Image (tube, rainbow over all chains, first blue to last red; front, top):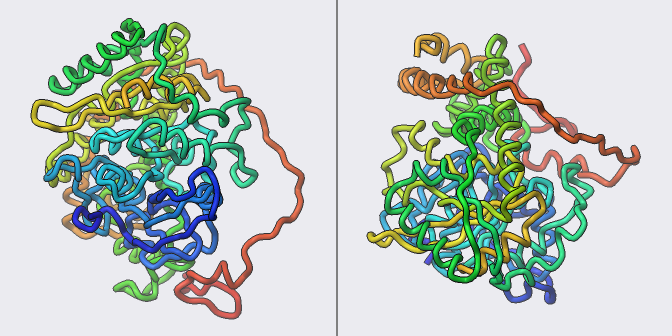
Length: 431
Length: 92
């Protein structure tokens, strides 16, 4: 039961249409995706009781395709975390590895799928937030190419990096859900109409990897935990046995991906989260402990002290710092250079390989409570996922097996922009 | 590490810019954590200058009015409103 591991923030049902590609299926929705008439909190006290007056485009599309939404899933507050422990509604436990975190930030979405409480789920991925929980919970997650899926109605954390994507037990089911939500949207000017990118995604899950060329970035394997690396190579062996071949590639830029990602994400967050002022929605400045004492700024700062959790404050402050006069060139501009470098590295590596493979996460799921005191160590766990967001590329995490201790390990495949079909085909050889 | 020494006053200053009140415990913890995190961010200094070949094109659309939220819907979630306006604290 989803309640045992705290995967839902609310279990209000949204009925879908009678017919369609997802008729009869349940698709849980992460709680940072707007649902008309149903509370949407982003895992934050700041938005407790907030009820969106409109649906996100992805919610419109999946209910029109017949899916029923069984509830809104728990998440790291505003998507800021790698363990789903920063939620104001309590941490989520990993149903596939009790006592361990489910990964984050879409931990609730991966948990309900892993436990069989929902057929599929939507997550969002800014620096790994779909792929990490998919890997930790032993399910499949896809982070689409930037611009494939509309972000209209997604409560923004870092606009230039994030995408909504599917989590499901198998690659084929994840592809079915992606096919329903993908495609241009007049409400999101960053969506792209890329020829052939949205059709035949589910059909591509034929498991045919004969002749597939896999590049393995050494930087993303060497730094990983031994138990993870062993399981990773077993999965590569299996792909080889089915006709694929691999070669090693170098991506020197990824050594700087985590810091570039955090500088950019925090900077964008500090601007995005300025909208939470306690006046227009969410936590009321007039009811916060200080009330309307003092002027607008004081009241604003007071509501935000009360509404935001510690990780959110940390990121808003660091983002404000990185953008402030005198530091902008040192942090933000250098991070954008690193982002361009990462993109070039991936383009080069993908010119000589169909897909790039690495462990999704360099470590197995952490024990609950272990990562909260040391934010930097938690950030470093995103080493293999963040480069993909910086490069705007698609990636999939598929179950690669388990460590000797029975902890799930995910294999990440990265493809060229709008090359989702290639990833679905390759991933379906494993799950 | 020398360049990124962060003191409690600096944390308070940034919190003030970001309009987030902090209690003393948070200031103390953040001072310590920010020093670690910022010195890690400083490894960005090793990143070479990169030729950015972004293929950016403007996406334009006709400037036509569409149906949007009604005033009532837009105010639905406001803790306080008056005569069709958001009601907030005094400005100064």
